[in-house]
Length: 152
Image (cartoon, rainbow, N blue to C red):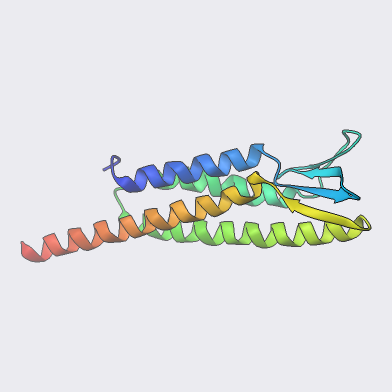
């Protein structure tokens, strides 16, 4: 059924991913001045020039949010829904690995710059938490259905 608590968790995971795509995920500071803002798709420097050096972050986050949305409608097949949740969690962990690599590589390319994480950089962690809660709910539903089948 679509009105389960897992649907709410999956919907919150979608919202967190989409909001993360819209917000800046970090800034590079040189001597206390914001020089470059990092988004999921591009970097914006102080003059407003855009550079699409970090597009793989967007390329991981977009399918992740689409997969979360698709997983909502797999309520007929709970096993596949649980597997999709776990795959999506691994995808978001991969996003964080890419995020770390890009912040270190791009921070080293600009001499003496400090990288600061912004609010948008933490939203995939919320998405991972919501996906894990959805996974636990799906597994508990599967156990409940199996127990009911044994009683029959």
